[in-house]
Length: 312
Image (cartoon, rainbow, N blue to C red):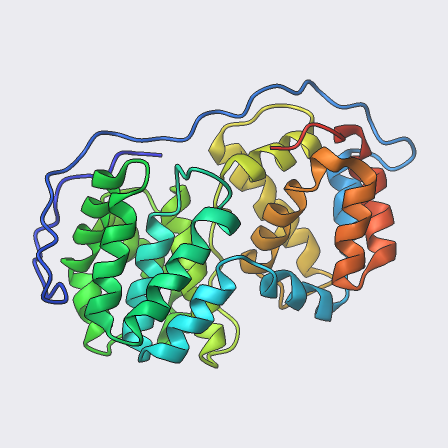
């Protein structure tokens, strides 16, 4: 991931909190290790084609459950319940932008502590910002994460959000604009993992607020789990751009069976499923049983069985 660029020119309202911090060092994600090309899947073509055909059979209600199982879902729901929309969107973008280089899995040491921050703030937006600052100070690359938080809060985009110019309906309709503007505000490519992920969270928040489906597709946020699943599917290591192209192809293919499907659902499934690769077919089939699609799980396990023990 590219290093956060220089401070933006617009210095808007920042919640009354002095968030100035000198820009920090460059950061990035370590490349995934190991794994040679997997064997082909007999009678079914490539593992990717096998995977696509299996996912075509996922029922709509199971796709909904996939998103509901995301670890950030509790934070988003709580933010909406305790704060007005504009504040909830602000807090959501901050959390998405700083979800990287964690001490452990996000579902264990990132989203639960942030939920506690919101509960302790009790709906006070400035207290929630202060609590997030204190949390990031204790995290790996804490100074850098504080600087990123400050940069967003002082951006023109953030001022527009807090002054009511980004309703849930507008966000769903113009998600591509928000995504691009977020990259500009942070001095990063829109395809960067945290930029794409923060935009995905904004889309999820808009849905929770009743805005319906988004009308613009996002790139796949590429992290270690998505890298691992992509390696399993294609049998070769790929750079981030190639991985994004792969998942865009998967989405196009799946839309023939599920026209309303978006990268929100597909990224959520990829991220959750990748965590089950190491456990092999048993873990994969159990995951889809939990979604209410056991037969799909059996098919996916056949597609990905060659990757047992090689998850992230």
